[in-house]
Length: 255
Ligand SMILES: CCCCCCCCCCCCC[C@H](O)CC(=O)SCCNC(=O)CCNC(=O)[C@H](O)C(C)(C)COP(=O)(O)OP(=O)(O)OC[C@H]1O[C@@H](n2cnc3c(N)ncnc32)[C@H](O)[C@@H]1OP(=O)(O)O
Image 1: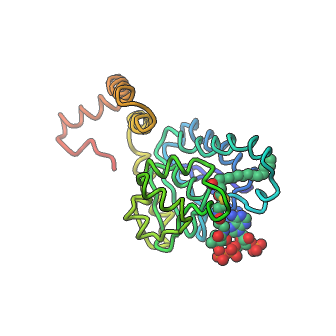
Image 2: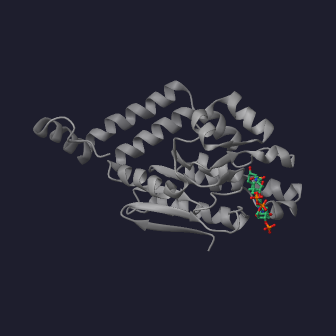
Image 3: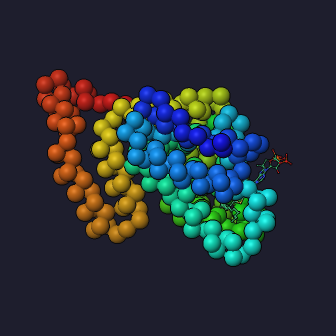
């Protein structure tokens, strides 16, 4: 199976394994959607790591498969492709991408669906679709511009150039750069720390920030205030405020 979901200690690892470069064919894209939806609903999954293995995250869509496609086939396929990646972005739990080696095209677009990206010091990211006469087709034009700004996103999309880990960190495309051998370990540790947090408050925070990026300010503020008020009904809120009052500041933190 090219994609699996392994769950341990509250962390679900969405693992791509389609040698040699984790090229994303249709079957893999569909499987990513299925497992993202499973991770979203499983109560034993409180945070997620997306991982392609020690050597490569994903080199993008399977060009050999795409080459056989005609315009009609892609018209029929394009929405399902975006939906498979949006399923990852919509997981209502913290998601950390563990980026080893190449994350190109659809691979970079998959990493953009995570909340955070930990990159190995040898990682190379980019959207090289322009070199194929295409543009990113799995959300990259939207998510990259929202993450690093429109002009930086246009630079990467117009040129198709790859950026190394240090430049990706400077751009804000990745959040942490670690030795290549430690990528999964560090990404999982981050996810595990978040998995210890108040699940509903984390869901509220993610949905409020993400919805705000997709709508007008008034709607975003409405989402925030509804969640803020709603969280007053939770046990986590009771416990958090009780521990502050009875045990002092700092007791409530979980990270
Ligand atoms: C109804 C039917 C539908 C069917 C169609 C399905 C539609 C799917 C649509 C998905 C669209 C996603 C949207 C996305 O925006 C579009 C893309 O992602 S386009 C692809 C973008 N990626 C790239 O352009 C990267 C291409 N690869 C490279 O540049 C290089 O391989 C590399 C990653 C820089 C690594 O270089 P090297 O280290 O030199 O290694 P090789 O080049 O020799 O590669 C090793 C081996 O892997 C194969 N390979 C690498 N990348 C891909 C790929 N993207 N697709 C397929 N195969 C790939 C390469 O051919 C070699 O294979 P080998 O020769 O060993 O057999």
